[in-house]
Amino acid sequence: QTVVTQEPSLTVSPGGTVTLTCASSTGAVTSGYFPNWFQQKPGQAPRALIYSTTNRHSWTPARFSGSLLGGKAALTLSGVQPEDEAEYYCLLHYGGAQVFGGGTKLTVL
Amino acid sequence: EVQLVESGGGLVQPGGSLRLSCAASGFTFSNYWMTWVRQAPGKGLEWVANIKQDGNEEYYVDSVKGRFTVSRDNAKNSVHLQMNSLGAEDTAVYYCARLAFGGVIPRNDYWGHGTLVTVSS
Image (cartoon, rainbow over all chains, first blue to last red; front, side, top):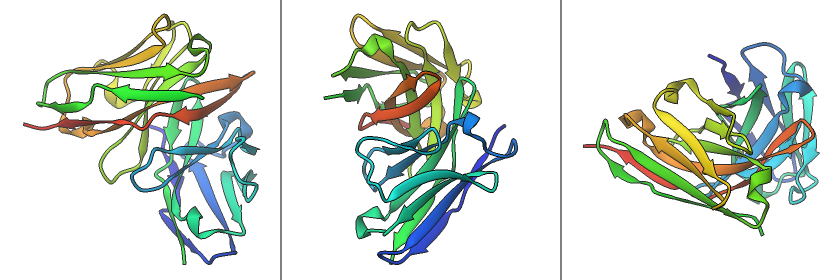
């Protein structure tokens, strides 16, 4: 059973920069896993942020960027805003199936 | 405007069945894969199933194989999730999401607001 691992929680100061990562139990994450990132706030549905490692959706603020970093997928938030406090999930594609990471709770403090 | 609206959730007894629906609008439904994702109370997201545009390919997470069936009706712009032999572990909010492909590049771009399924006696 494939497991996708994220940091359970991170804290960042307003205006700061933070990087969230996403690892696969099958080995290094590559672009072939088409990493996606989602943001979810309490009581809301997930909102798509990044697809295929680096691509922003039309509604995604430029302060969100995706990359590959040290064998993992990564989501970097630069110039963090208070409204960025949320749970963030990565999603990897394994053929026709998909697996979410456990989520990272980002606190802006 | 793309809209996805789930329905069919509710309270069901262990061992029972439930059929969820997702009504799509604002896009050419038959051109897109569709995805079901669930979220147990206080837990993370879990991918459940995907179905291809023509309904001829389906994929499931191991924990629901043999119990859940995803289907679609392109004439009615809807996707369904038939859930049988339900257990407490299936209690969750169930979301449907559009799965778009740009070439071979997948993205779950639009999501519904979810429908709550509670399995309890």
